[in-house]
Length: 125
Image (cartoon, rainbow, N blue to C red; front, side, top):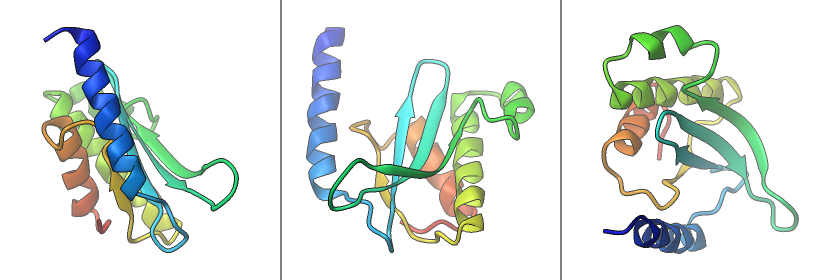
C-alpha cells in the first residue's frame, strides 16, 4: 500500500473518531500520537467554544521514564511505560475517567500497550 494512501486512511479514521469523542469536564479526552521512534499522550479538555486545553501530557521523552525507555526491549514496552506515566499524572490531578482518542490509529500494538498501561495504573475508559 502506498504511504499516501495509508496516511489518508488514518486521517479519515481520525475524523470519524473525533466526531464521537469529546473531552468534557467529567471525562476529558486521552489523545495519542506516535512517530517512528516515540509515542506521545495528552489529556485534553474540549470546551464548547475556543481551542482545546491540555491538562497533562507524557511521552517516551519524559525525564521521569527516559532511563526505563532506553532499557525497554521494544516499542510496545515503551508505550506501556508512557501509559502508566500519563495515568499517574492524571490521577494526581483527580482525573479518573477519560475518553480514549486513538488518533485514527488502529487499536493494536503500541496504541493497545499504552491503553493497557494506563488501565493498569487505574485510569478508566
